Length: 300
Image 1 (tube, one colour):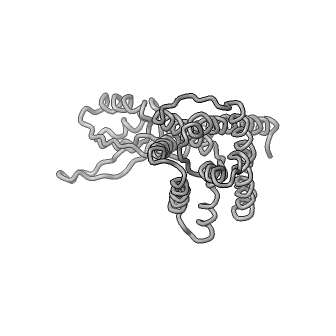
Image 2 (cartoon, rainbow, N blue to C red; image 1 turned 90 degrees about the vertical axis):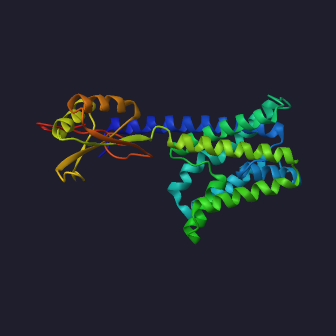
Image 3 (cartoon, rainbow, N blue to C red; image 1 turned 180 degrees about the vertical axis):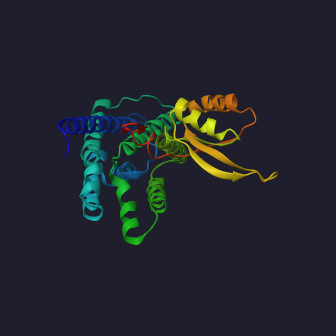
């Protein structure tokens, strides 16, 4: 049963998460209003569809995005369940609202006329905001949903259908954008794709070290005590002398790597250590709270 303190912490966490999502959606909308719309660049996703509808049918961008997001929200609710739909609720209604408000506030204001600067800053702002929203466990709605539905119904990989949709949306704008705008738009898409990838991986990369030494017991104990990191022991055998021994394997952050190296070298100057980066680490000490074994039992 949850204690009042636990409920209070969960409520506070939900408020902080919501505030972060609203801030990032505002940054996303600002990138569109300040750099994409004034420069006439092409865009992917619901914004790209909105630009197409605005040009050919006179539908306001924010109005189209609102209708489209609501439709996709309904599709997500029906096909992917209530829990998933709940994560898109904020973006479904807030993004078109703030897009409309910022467009009204900006009016005819032009931040810069340099199309390259527009492509760079739009890409950075969109990639940053998308990355934070996704890391927060939410969804931006819109064109995120059809690829997930296709995966569920037809087993089509999300990446394949998402790229197909983006290409189709970009191509639809070739009909009314000049060639230079198209090229700058492609640069923007490339930039926000790279930024998004970096944001999703930020803070997750760790370093795995495999240490082979005759003094593995001392090294094993030192890593646990001085670095407060877990270790795993593997049986190994030397390829030349065929001498059996043990390898100490541990995962540390990049900042802790030099400290680990000093610990190992202080114990055994002849230790053999292999180090390589790992993309993501899950488990106690990384994605869950550490637990330490004491005389009286486990302590978090």
